[in-house]
Length: 96
Image (cartoon, rainbow, N blue to C red):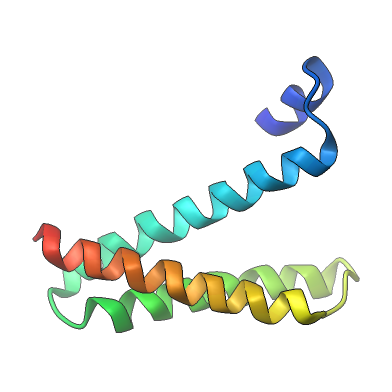
């Protein structure tokens, strides 16, 4: 909703808005996996990585439901989700 207001009210283009949505997704994976790592207390990279992988899988399922199909970017989505989740999990364990 906020991004659509920014697109209509400012000079932000729809392609530029994609970067904001990607950044928001990565931020949510980092925050969620850091909480997972903090609560688990050990193996933060694995627990956080699985959290990020789950987020990526949910995004892919939503893409399939919207008939967007699967592409090579789908694998990149899963990889970035795992990597961001692993980083957040390590951060969460070290925050403990």
